[in-house]
Length: 438
Image 1 (cartoon, rainbow, N blue to C red):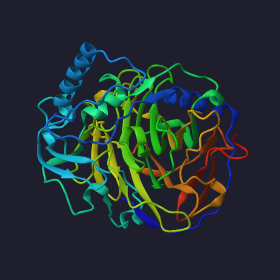
Image 2 (image 1 turned 45 degrees about the vertical axis):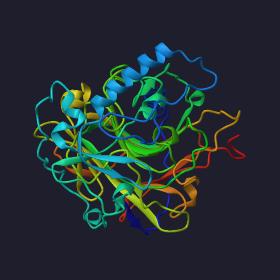
Image 3 (image 1 turned 90 degrees about the horizontal axis):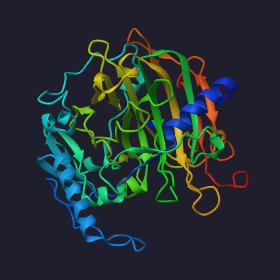
């Protein structure tokens, strides 16, 4: 969960080899030349029902028959995705959290999981950092009042009609929609400051990610910080598993940093989704709601907080497991969901990403990380610390040959270092539009 940190670290900037820069840039453009499809905060009642449909935008013609057909499809989808709850929790931030029986969660609608129950926890990777295990547990916003879901259930953020209507169609809802692949990073509306390793076989990754609430200035933009587990040829067979925090006003209807996941096995074309919005990820934890706000958050020159994220491949069954905070197993992605990731990952990536729509005719003011450049350091710039990968022996090991990439360094940059307390770390981020980033 979020934790307080107080260690000041020195910087050392690493240069990215030209060949690797081109290689990772191609992946970034392929994986993020996609438009995430978003929703508004939950506002309706449970069990698949919802508020009355919002009227169409002023510049659209109202077609009653088409609208009725769309609503019919949406309500059918909501009946499928919103499972019966044994308890409902109203979060202070406006979310509605349904506690549903774990064997009824969306994952078990998948034909290869139908009728099954969640697996028992796997063996964790060897070499866990003892410092991380002492991190005090905090809470997501929906638990601020002492609320929790009963044992045997999982907390699920409710989906409403308004959520799906914002996405324009059921097919697009909760997915990153692939657009044409841009080969020139400077022309992309997705911008990054990331660290990555490749050239080996990877069976997982771990990092502690500083949590902020960056300003997102356009409803169609987002700012996120995450880790990627990647395999494939960087074509249409790209496999990724992703987890971290994101601020997305259109997806969540606010500016809170929220814990999120994503997966795809075909370069974001047809498979995969955000959070629990399709059959795939199997959740086992009753204390973490994927898509819910993270609390507390860091503030400039004040107290800092971070979350631990670990993804690793269970050597016994081959499934990819997710851990959040100090030892909280969230669940797993079954291995059969993937092609290349049934074996191992070929790249691990950490860092920040924003969308720059240029809706005002210039570069966006949307912030990455804390909204400050990397050279400002601890308490001012956002960081990733204790970067590790999982090897073939299910052991956590330090990073080697870490490469850095900031595709718009005058807008958002990155600086890396290494010391005994934080291991491999980096600071990253920036304000977006400024005198050097018009």
